[in-house]
Image 1 (tube, rainbow, N blue to C red):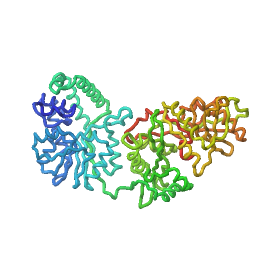
Image 2 (image 1 turned 45 degrees about the horizontal axis):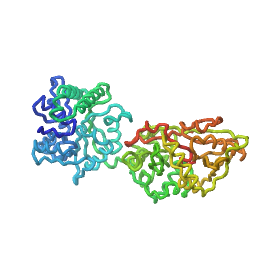
Image 3 (image 1 turned 90 degrees about the vertical axis):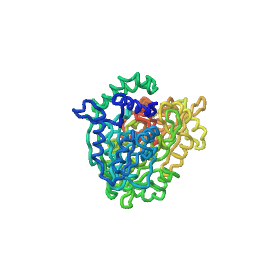
Image 4 (image 1 turned 60 degrees about the vertical axis):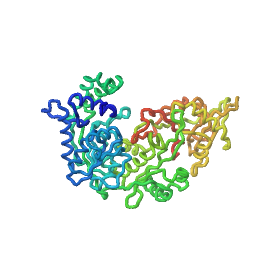
Length: 575
């Protein structure tokens, strides 16, 4: 049996075509071509290895090679006198390497994410393995494994332009540089090798086409796999030609600890006084302690903070919120109380406290592998724009205001408006179930009795009035309105009703507004739902609030949520 047959696809294919053309092979990585190579990929591959070795620190030096390929580079490092360990999660590659270079080859079957070692390393090498590791994880793990002045070398394919959310592709070179800086590394060398590496893709494509029938037979592959590989290779080559993909050499050096500006920690309940002081500094007014406790309830650590000289200078908080995500019940996280001390707001880069506190929170809590699949919030225009600039948020909607004049007319004989009996939990739960069913194509926060009771009836500082609208003929409640009385206005903070009954609720609200001697009423609602609230008299205006979506960690793409949220003022934590 072919020794490389069990390699992960398509590495087994690359190994076979190299063996077919050259009789043997030492590497599976890209070659770096020059004009006199005559398309000899083995010579080009050796040139890539020579480049790597030219940047190695002289012995004594302790090296970790992440991803060993065929074990050739690892064996040469051992022969050169380096104290080296190789890691790979592929047992077949380890067996091949040990059969070729001896059982004593220092290699461990483990992912970087899981690898630990008692001794620190001087250098970590990622030769075409970095693209398979989350960039932030790569730098964080490397930081924990390296000595204080340790280095990272990355030789790999890269995205030269920012990938789209619908087609992630290769890691973006800007993220390597910015994340590296943020997580404590200085870029000390950068080489664009794209033109030299490009002939490798041409060679692979031509060879796979040339040997496709043989590959199916010898490696026992499905012909569809080879056809798919050819199409993928053609697309990959096109991305090199149009400048989307490239190949690069990046060398980073770990910064001294004293260069770190901020210390990021998890907030605790005993941070309350300091956080309330920060709130006053950031927003110019005091938040009552009972309001803070009401918002965060019993959640001891649901927030991140940044400290400088033992003082909290930034906070990024979150409150769990039960929602229905396209009809399925999940728990989202409502981002709130994002604040930075005015003295430190000038640092708006990825080195600043806002970026540090936000990324720490999002990486811990939000995304497909975390406790909360999605997050939402209501940031100021300035905070939203900064978050987009830093790559943290994408837009998924706009919050609009609909305003109606008071209506001097009788209430329709078909409906009845009266204050809600606060003990009527069954009615609220029934209305919520109908509302949720009608909005199963949207994302909507749960509005059952438990939520309504905590959010409005037990609010420590604001007074809300709940009204129910019912049919005079059937006696059934059509909907419930949560209202907040203001000087000359009434704010419709929330509704629990099927969308088809919204216009009836608005008519009743306008009539109530007149009867209470007020001039107008208004509500906030996401833009795609404003048509339900216009009711022939409403005027729509912007609130200036953009609904954000986490783009920092992997998860549901923003395109799936664009204009799909049902959000009102009651979904905020400040109305």
